[in-house]
Length: 157
Length: 62
View 1: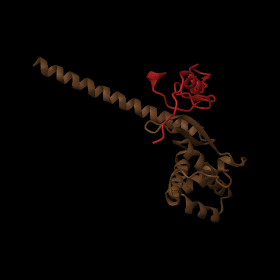
View 2: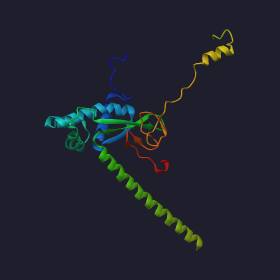
View 3: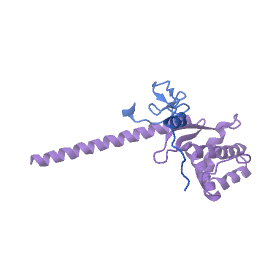
View 4: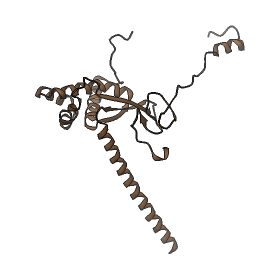
C-alpha cells in the first residue's frame, strides 16, 4: 500500500532535495519557464503555488516567508510585483506542465513547466533568441566566406 | 546442483512464449502537421501543443 507516501524523493537526501526545489522555484519565478524532467516539474509545482499564494497576500510577513525560501531577492520582488498580480481571480493551478520528449543518456522524460499568463513574455523571449541566433549565424557565414576568399587568394598567389 | 529432469517440448516452450510479445505504441496525430506523435506531448516535429507554438524547432526539420 502506498498510504502516506505522497510526494517525490527524486533520489536525493532531504537537504539536497530542498536545495534543488528552492533553486527550481526561484528559476521558474524569474524565468517564467523552466525545462526539467517530468518528476521534478511535478515536484516543484506545489512549492511554486505556495509562493504565489504568499505573493498574493502581499504583506510584510509573507514577503519575509518568501525571502526565506527563494534563493534571490530579485525573485521575491518579481514574485510580488509581476507574477502574483496575474492571478488575482484564480485559486491555484498557476502552472502548466507540457511533456516534450526524452532525455538523451538516461531516457528520462522531459517537460517544461511554465507560469500561466506568461505566454506573451515567453513568446517575445523566444523571438529575441531567434533573432540573436540568426544574427550570429549570419556573422559566422560572413567569416567563413572571408576565410574562403583569403585561402583562394593565397592559392592564386 | 539441481537440474531439469525432463526436456521441454517445443510446444511447451511455444506455449510459454505465447505471452511474450510487444505491443505497438499508441500514437496520435498532430493536428497541425499531421505527423504521428505521442499523445499528451508537444509535437517534436512542429513544436505545437494545444494550439500554441511551445517549442523551438530547427527550421530544417519543419
